[in-house]
Structures are given as structure tokens and as C-alpha cells.
Length: 384
Image (cartoon, rainbow, N blue to C red; front, side, top):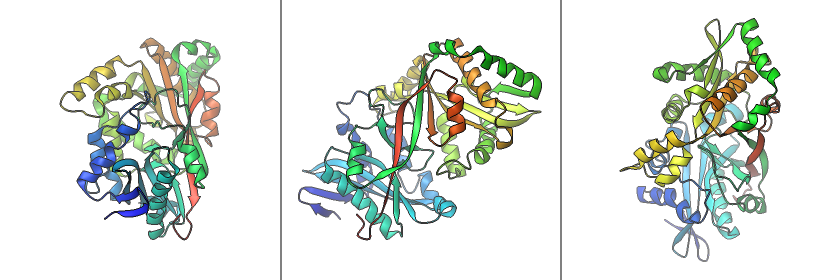
């Protein structure tokens, strides 16, 4: 059933498999002339957005909408409720995600109005996003850094997205930073930091070892065991469910870089982790979102050729922070990246309130080159 919003603009709820495919493929036309956009993997999106299969639907519910104008899909959005978030932070907040729109305020308003009305019907008084679907998935509107391609598991969008939302009354909730650096520039790193790492190892008994991808399940359990307490105070944190974590492990183990990923241990006890992944976007762009019939081989070849990587995850148990472990992780990454011929690194995403990590990065030649913004708005009684 379609609901007319204004003449020539129609909101279409996505309720069938065919509509879901249209929802997934809608961005291809929008980004046809954008050299920096990287298409998602269609097969992954089909499963993730399927209420019968997607891991989010174990603890959440979502409504998908398309906007059609002149018989063409010109926008899309999800409105979703995360029951685990409700348990931790209260039940006032709902979310939107997977936001895409042509540069047309009428289309953007139709999308956000549909999302707010749905969330209002679920008892929500505040809308927050975009999140696809959670804070550890793809998040935010890109508001800085439009002139370079996104690295793997990050988003790209046109510059007009932020202004469209702001014209509709949305305001900044929080920013997430992506730092970028060239490995060659790390010759400028103060040698004292490398000496600090050596002293740390000698005096405190801390050992740094590479992750072992031949024992993925064991390493995954270590990462999960550190993640849960180490990230518990992060903005918007909601713990992974077992299925969400397994999905992440399945994705990461194909692109994890063991030479640039480490576990910190004291007397055999893991106390910190640092995880880096290859920039699969270089390969994904070549296959245009399709793994089959030959896309998977193309992607594997592309992964072997990429000289970019993303440092995606770092955490240290609270009682072992401020001892230099973070610096030791960074210096190890610098040394090994240079040794293995990597050219570029992105360290992301770091929430603007994570002052400890941001202060650590001041010691290295990296800069904030992309900012992803999460927006918020109170939902009015009429859902607008």
C-alpha cells in the first residue's frame, strides 16, 4: 500500500523481497557519477536487511521506506527500534539509517517524516542517526572529507546530506573522527616512543604478540572478552549479541592483517587488543557489489594488491590504561606497516569524546581527514 505525501512524491513501505532488492540497489543511480562511492556487497545487504535472517532483528525491529518520484526511486531510509539500547538507556530513542536521497528537500522531508511517524507509533520521542543499524556498524553522515574514497566499513555520501537534515531541524548529536596518515611520514615519530615500548616490555612484563588467524575462534573470544568491559563507557555502546559478533568475525577474518594486529598480555592474561584490516574497498569497487560468479576471485586478488589498511579496533582493560600500552600498539603498527610495504593508514572511527585515544594520536603524523556526524531531533506529536 502506497501513501501519497505530496504530488509526484510517494512513500512506499518495503514489505516484499522485490522491494528490498529495490531498496538495496537504489544508491547505484544516485552515485553513478561519484568516483569515490563504493557499492555495498549485495548478498550481504540482502541477508542483513531480511527480518528472518538479519542479526539485528534478534533484538530489534525496523521499517524500510522508499521514496518514488516520477516512477523512480529517489530516496530510502530505515526507522528502527533497538530493544537492547532501550534496556541500557531508556525507551525514548528510536533510530534511522541507510539514508540516501537526491538533493531535493521534498524527498528528504518525506523520508524523515515517514521514519519519525513510525518511531512515534512505537512510543519514541527522539530520533537519532544514521546508524546501519548499530553504533558498531556503518554510522553517520559524512560532513568532512568528500574528496577521498571511504575505507572499508565506512560510508561516503554527497556534501548536501548534512544541510538537508539541518534544514529539517536535525542537530548534531556527536561526531566520529577518521584519522589518516602516510606510513613514510612515520619516520618523523619521536624515537623516544619506540624506547618507551621497549621499557614497557622490559619493566612491566607486558608481551605483545601478533594475532593468530589459525586459531580464529580463540582470538575472537579474547577480542570479545576485552571489548565488553573496555568499550562499556563509550558513547552509545550496546554490547554485541553472539550472532552479531560472529557476523563481524566472519567478515573480519577474511581481511584481518595479523602483522598489524596485536594482543597485549601480562603473565599470559590478555589485557589489550589492536586490530587492523586490509582496505577491501579497493577490491569491492571493482566487482560493483557482486561476489558471483567471478567477483570473489577479483576481490581476493584486489586484497593482495592493496597498500591501504584501517586500524579499526583498539582497547585496553581499564586497570591497565595509562601505562603506555596504546603507544606500544601504535609503534608496533608503524614498524610493521613500513616493513610490509603499506603506504596509507586510516585509524577510525574515534568518537570525539575519546580524549585518551585522541591524545595518544597526537604523537603520530596523522590528521583528522573525515568526520562522520550523528544527528538527533525530538519527534513532534504529529511525527514531523
